[in-house]
Image (tube, rainbow, N blue to C red; front, side, top):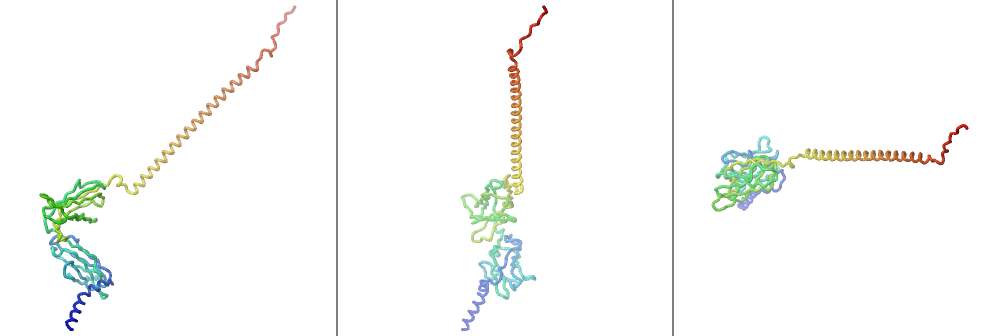
Length: 303
């Protein structure tokens, strides 16, 4: 009986955090790594867990390890804590999450965070085709290759966008192992520095040294370089030109009509003047008739 009670108590102690986490009475914490989640070998990194003012203890879990992997008390502000790794090695690489305990119980687990170590193997080489300076909308290809038989390659864009692409490696006789990353239509957000890494499938968080860097420069086409304000100004200019052309056409049409009217009036006046002259001549001819005139008198001479 005592043995049974001991076993039940042991199971309760083990299952207590899981049961409380599933209850989800407290806000889920946030986990992140500083200076980042991709860390060079033998450098330091801090894993932060930001939870609640009510937190009494913070717990860090690592996938495929005994949980909790580490435990810390809150810092002075009590709503977060940090887990220090002084020298990054392959044993620290993996997937982490954190949670905390308060008087109300255990919180939910945070989202998973992948912590990667680089520098475990020789660096691959990176090339780009057709060029590292292209216009927006074209297709380019990055080729990451290595003499090491990596199972996969990952291409990373450094900086604020932080884009990444992962591909299985290709093996060909008498050629380095490689992967070709095709970007069908590059855009201005692809501007930046690119590097690639190789890794093996059974250790996805242990990468090679970084490849040589490639700076990609994407220039916009003429049509794409126009801002909305410039587009509006261009449209306004087209409308204004159309109005001016229409006004000029109407002006010349009106001028043409006025000229035609003036010529018609002048011609009508000339015709009317000729007709009046002819009528007066005819009237004078009609008024003169030799029969109506008295015959000339003969001069009488005295006898």
